[in-house]
Image 1 (tube, rainbow, N blue to C red):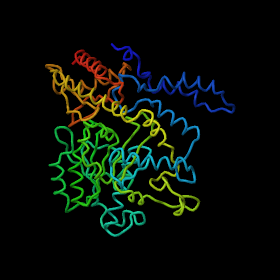
Image 2 (spheres, one colour):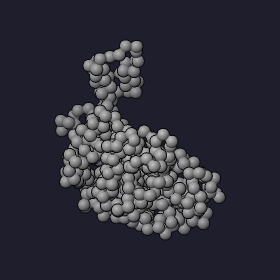
Image 3 (cartoon, rainbow, N blue to C red):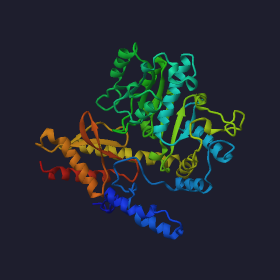
Image 4 (cartoon, one colour):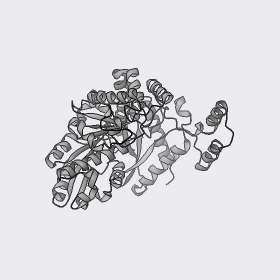
Length: 457
């Protein structure tokens, strides 16, 4: 076994044990502690319960430690604590975010009219995208959504957002927050490789277009369940026909557009009305760091709210605070800028490519094993599979996958995840960091196969 994989990824302590350890840190007292005492308290009581994202055996989520360039930018941003609301709050930070957004639009080839704003996370980016979509739909019907709200629609219950069955749950948050309710989400089935099924999409549109008002269709560039990329080109074409907003949730997958051999999967991203992306997933920048792109910079005007003491219409620009709701905005652009400048695009692409190749290699290897069922052909750095030992009762397979997951979690030396696909429980491996190699993934595969053989039916 690799030495790194023999080390614990996290403490494995129970919730009660973690709470007991952290309690002294939260004992607020009249007198303060020295920085040395405080550091010792944190390092002995809190840090042991952190997850070690840097370990090659961390295969469950999208996190890893900041790389050196990003850490430098984060240190400077923290030291000066610059807000990025507008020019008045910090000319340097506001201009950096503005120029970084434009540079990212060029990097992803989103077109000369595109623009970007930094967000707290992809959940909020999806929410804002749906708001802008609804706002434009209201404009097409002759009223201002910002003033009238949903009552401006003759029948708000007709409003519909079409999403894939595997779309992220943040879209439920979005329609809840916008007052549309989850009944506004119309879910479309996926094909054999977990992509939004185009035939089912066309069928759904034909079935509901007389009774529902489709104002947005969301495709996913890298689903969180399998990493699959929806057929973006065809969805964008359909949105043009429907005069509906096309949003792409690329929080996880958009980064892979930069890898030349993957770029074909992202055809027509530049034609979508909006796209979101989380740099904190693959670019080694501190959490949170998310970006919302729009095809037309003018679309951000739907977000603008002016104030009396700042964010005035005649204030100097750039004014990032007019592009999204937060009035207090962290300097998220700087760690991303310093990460890219430190690594350079050649190395960034190498780092993006490495986990993709690792997952592809492991998938090909596992496909030859009689006791492993591969649930999809991986597009990105995710692989879902099921252990199916010879002669194992089919009705107990879900229980077996849960057993394996719980055993791995209890051991604390590896980290995998579990999800449901087509009412089946499956195991899920994620490779984001280049530290996660094919060899490291295969170590985990060997281990979970061993656990499957040990399971007592």
